[in-house]
Image 1: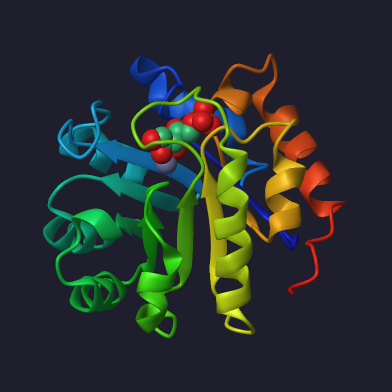
Image 2: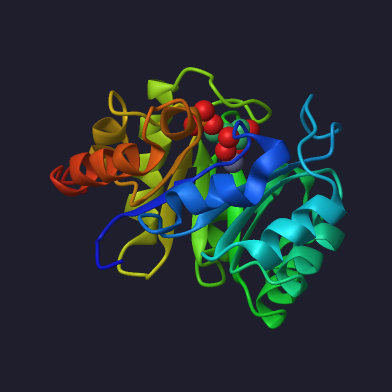
Length: 225
Ligand code: DX5
Ligand code: ZN
């Protein structure tokens, strides 16, 4: 997909009993598939078991972007990379050795990403700017699809874009991304957009992805101050 933005549909709220066909509905127009892994401890929800995740990773026709919302990220990050994910995001709040975990994810062949909950500050993680492939700024509290986008996170997105500078680091936003919010996040500097309920609640999920992509592509990021 030739584009300066990426759209990653989240299957958290798709039909889990038919998950591979749910993926196929969006595969042709998506860049990566966003796979949320929730262990019920890091955030108050569960999603896919390890067996289900492996079926999704091996069955998906598009690369998988795993978002681990688990308490043992140091162990789980490399495990998901080894299982075949193309990108693995671990939360800074549940990673005790960020440098090593990033290294172990990358050495298992995946892009490595650091995810931040709304209350976490990006400034604390500038030491990792030359190690990560992506930052994931959460625009809702981790746990559930269908929550409202937090516009107050845009300051963090802009700050992160500024810190990234010329590095080829992707900047992902996750939570409440829809036709009404994607331009706001793009203007703040995001280039990689997770969309769950906006996509799977639409009558035609693939068309919705095209709409989201067009809106993001036609929005210019605000100049960095
Ligand atoms: C929330 C997950 C999100 C979620 C997004 O913890 O990380 O990826 O599926 O869903 P929407 O787009 O509905 O907010
Ligand atoms: Zn997610």
